[in-house]
Length: 120
Image 1 (cartoon, rainbow, N blue to C red):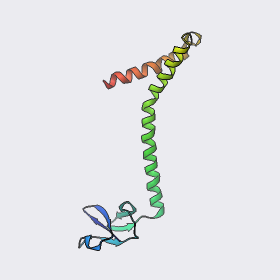
Image 2: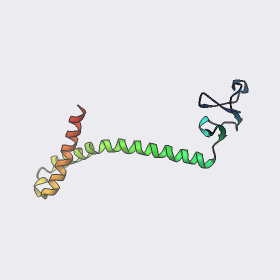
Image 3: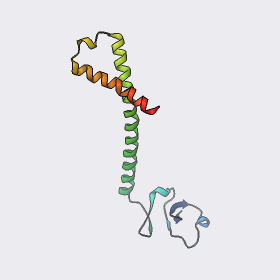
Image 4: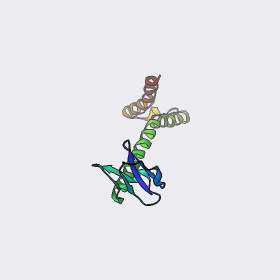
């Protein structure tokens, strides 16, 4: 199996006839993926296990950030839904709260409405 670079893109193939002449190419183990090969300083080589692990961690970190962004986007709605459900069940609940607690709850309710109006 060969890995080669063409137009700044790394390819792998088991068919040597697909490797263009006059390109940088190396032999790689069967099943090697293009992301397991690196082209740096005009040298094409296999990534080390440490580099592969760094790539996996970077991908996991990217996915975690995306998940956090999705979760963060839902939090105002979830907070509002919980608050509304509790207030529907216990209409006098706010009466027994301090002014600070009432203000916090009301800010969570208005935060979603403000976000909604910005999206329209």
